[in-house]
Image (cartoon, rainbow, N blue to C red; front, side, top):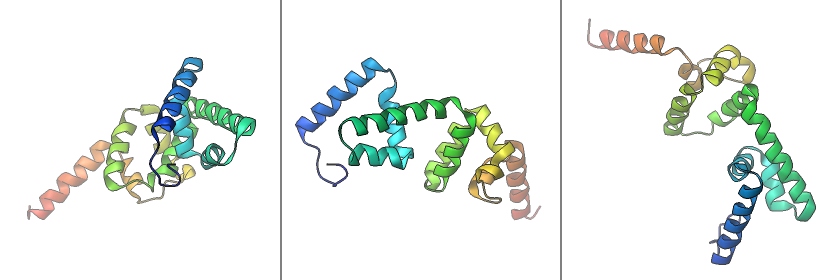
Length: 149
């Protein structure tokens, strides 16, 4: 229904909730992992809406396994971060940078291998990865110059 931009019916909401609850019991964290896989991996999204039965189940399980790999691999998380960056609004980019500051391993990897991962020189992400001290000094100097000092 969502794919067709139609309202989700009550019995469909209940079925989704029941399935989510059962999946969470079998594999804690799976619902969020599956939602993340659908959001970031087009082939998983296609499987969810385009396949049925065992073929769909197999692809969704593969999606869950891939999400486990992403969660445990800084390189995969960094590649996903860079891939998603350009699709974010300015406000979402600000939120993403704040979240990035909480993941020192990911931030360090992006600084070291950003170019290899697709961070374009001079892009907003490139600027966001600059050390805070440098950005603060640039803003401070810019204000001094603007004020005629």
